[in-house]
Structure formats: C-alpha cells, structure tokens
Length: 225
Image (cartoon, rainbow, N blue to C red; front, side, top):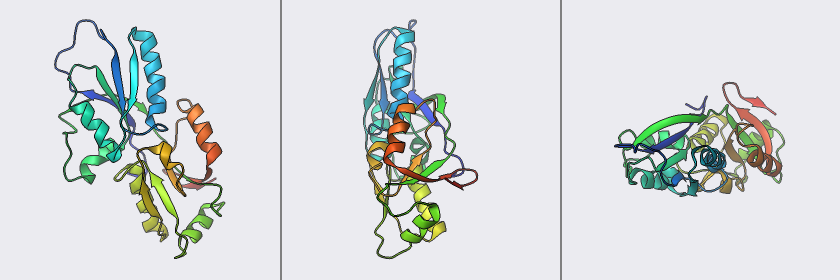
C-alpha cells in the first residue's frame, strides 16, 4: 500500500435523482482537512467549474479526525449532487483504522473521478534539524535523547502509516503527532508529506519547499535527494 499512494479522489453524497439542469444553484466542495493540503487542488477545481458551469463552486474546509468529520458532513447532506468532497487516501484507509465510522464508505458516497495520482512520499525535515541526508536523520532518530517527532494529517492517515513503517524498518523512535491537515503538520520535525503533483500544486509546493529540507522520496524505489 505504501509503495504507491492511493489517488486523491473526488466524491459526493449518493445522488437519488438529478435535476434536468445541473447545477441550478451554488455547489459546495467540502475538504475534510485544514488549509494547505487537498484544498489547494479543490480551489483550482472550484474556480474552473465555476467558470465553465455558471454557478459558484465554493470550497469549505471541515478538518478533524483524519477527514472523518468532513466526510460525515457530506454523507449526511442531501443526496442531490450539490455537496461534493475532495479528499485524500485517508478516506480509503479509515474503514480499516477505525472500529466504527459515522457513515458507510461504499453506501453513502459515489466516486466521480481521480484528480491526482501521487508519485511517492517526501521525507523532509525542518532546516533546524541537524540532518542533511536520510542516513543522518536515521542515526539521529535512533538516539534515545533525540526527542524527534513527525507530523501527519491525522491518525490512520496513509502518511501516519508510512511514518510507523519507517520507524519499524529503520529502528527509529519518531513520535507521531497528528494534525488536522498537511498544512499545520509542516511545522513538525521531521515531516512526512505526500509528493505534490507539480502542475496542480505549484504555489503550495513552492511555499512548502521553501520551509522544508527534502531528504528523500519514498516511492517504488526510495531515493535520496
């Protein structure tokens, strides 16, 4: 599962019957994470749909619980196609990570399309961390007094699982700190983040790269930078 991140998906509450003309009113695009992650793509998508379809497509962030709070809001919305959701792979892993969810992933949602397919995971640190290579990070994190932590968009998120797999394989003891999205997690040291597609996240990626030092990309074949 960690060799390839599951695609970013666009989903909507199950539709019963569509009006003859769609959309006839504004459409909400729910992003179940804090600003700085999937909402960057959602806002680009919303702007294009607004222009092409003649109705506002408004993006709303509803973060919390690894996307569960926002997904629940969408699941309980009217099944009329006017509440969409742009989410991440955490939506797919949630049923395996939580004993009970306030919705049924298969019954309450209808997939529309894949928006992005990520190529891997960045392993990056704040420039203040005294590590400039992946090996240096591993050696530092193996020290009992290192007190290093890593951030992810939430408990059970794919990036959380990647961090724990890294701990297991590297023999490190990085402490996981969950956040309400990728944006807030950038402040954590080190930080595991999904690799952003260059065309979709140009502005967001530029700000992210300026704040972090990328040590390696974990994909089909991990490689150091």
